[in-house]
Length: 378
Image (cartoon, rainbow, N blue to C red; front, side):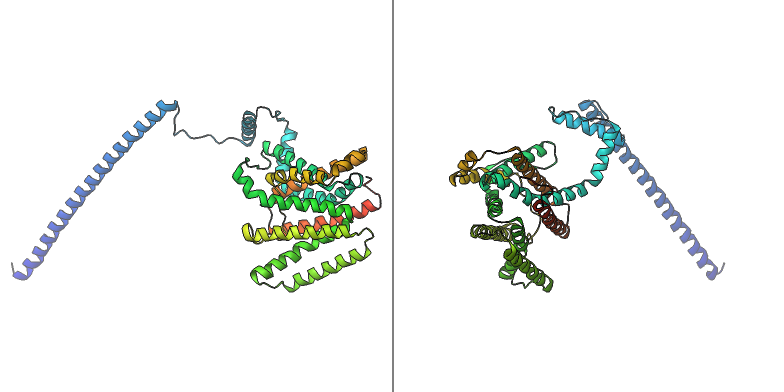
């Protein structure tokens, strides 16, 4: 055998040995991996058996049992039974299919219901407030009645989980005191302005105020000039307000003073929001909550008694139509407050402004109808 033939055979033998050794090592490694996996599997199974045994001894049920997905009807019955257990005094809900169908329809369209209620009740609110002042010229007492009704309605709604009312506390009352005082003064001066002026003049004032105050705060706090569209809108609103003042036959100096005080309180509220709460709250739907109505109610009533409004109540006997108008006014105010709270986080800012604009236009229509004697006879 020549040396040239020996070298390839030696190379082939070496390669065969290396391949054999590598294959044997691989087989051994695979065998070790399989044994290790089998040991880990047995250890995991043992741990799982011990955990299931311990959990079963604790409550007698299998903790890894697959939950059965309930049907929609069973979920409705379960939620009804849970609600009954949570509130023993609540009347039992009917399980009539028509009632269930109505509930489902209401859930799918309740946002539009809230929007319609807000527009209609806000539109008739000022007119009903003015009508309630015809028989009882006591703005502070009427402010107290409206706030008291709002407090009762919000407390009742919280019992049915419609509106969230936070528990009373000294810290929460202190934090809400400034906002509550400003809101109470706004409602009081609104009643006072309606007592000494017309609905249209008050409407022009509360329409013009948010834009003017927001533009002023933006300029003085952020040095921002209003846009051309905003400036033109404010000019048109100011011209309309001046025209209403010239054509109004019910204007008085005391009414103008109340409107100026209302503007000052509104400016203080907007400034407070810029500094403490929300820098973009100008002109938005802002609903006063439970504490915002509860805290200023009694002080406003005492202020009214200090201004001899108690004598006005004693001297004038209320008729049934007058009481009816006051009750309707309180109901409209409650609906506006509730819809504000329900719509506060569900609508964008632009939609809130559109709703407010529609409500103000509705106020003009309802006030015109009331002046013609078509629907309001206090």
